[in-house]
Image 1 (cartoon, rainbow, N blue to C red):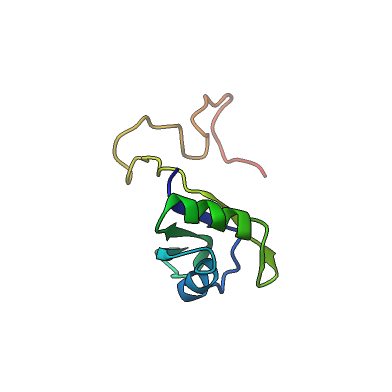
Image 2 (cartoon, rainbow, N blue to C red):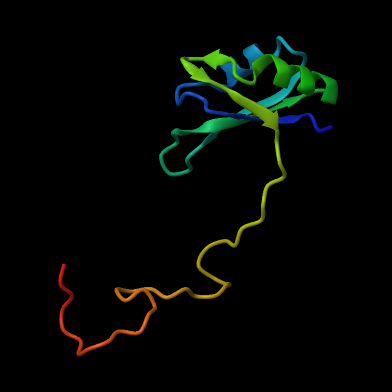
Amino acid sequence: MESKLYVGNLSYGATEDQLRELFAQAGTVASASVITDRETGRSKGFAFVEMSSPGEAEKAIQMFNGYSLDGRDLRVSIARPREERPRGFGGGERRGGGYGGGRERRGGGGQRRY
């Protein structure tokens, strides 16, 4: 079993120190990171906490899944590996676009009516 945990349904004001303190009740916390939006710096409402052993991770899941923190019930589970996603605009197939959404327009041009 892995020791990295996904912590979801966090309040936007939750801090890494707050998570470290909370999860320390289940064992040694190796790291805690609240995920933030890169443009605004605001929390996205989830975090990753890494416990020092799989046993401590399991204990943390049992203790804190459904635990109320700042009025929100936490969702704690084993973190899944990150999925690879294409970066930027390059690569991949182009999927339509513009006003027509990639479909054939019928009739004679002109302006769209809304």
